[in-house]
Figure 1 (tube, one colour):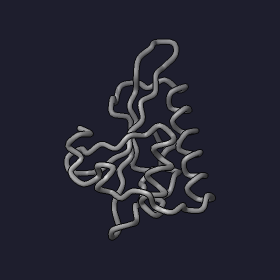
Figure 2: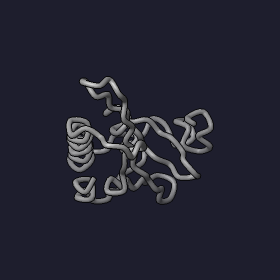
Figure 3: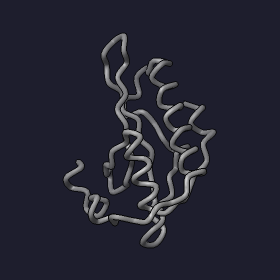
Length: 122
């Protein structure tokens, strides 16, 4: 998935980033102690579902760094080009929103959305 390596990391206020990413269909998960955002994409022809995820890191109490270039599909079998392109386009849109929209006033924090502990997302 070399095309995902073209994405850079992006740091934004946590609430702004979380709400933007969530509105684009991503959910928070924790894998081996690392927080990720994941999205499930269904291939229209085979009806098979593919899960793509990318890790995030937290800087202080209110900033999150999204590491889009470290993203990958959970199933390492052959992923259809249409699914890869759908995820790529979604990441482009997420990155565009995060770069160009102004952050809004926070209405929740990391604990209220389950980033601390995350047991109910696993």
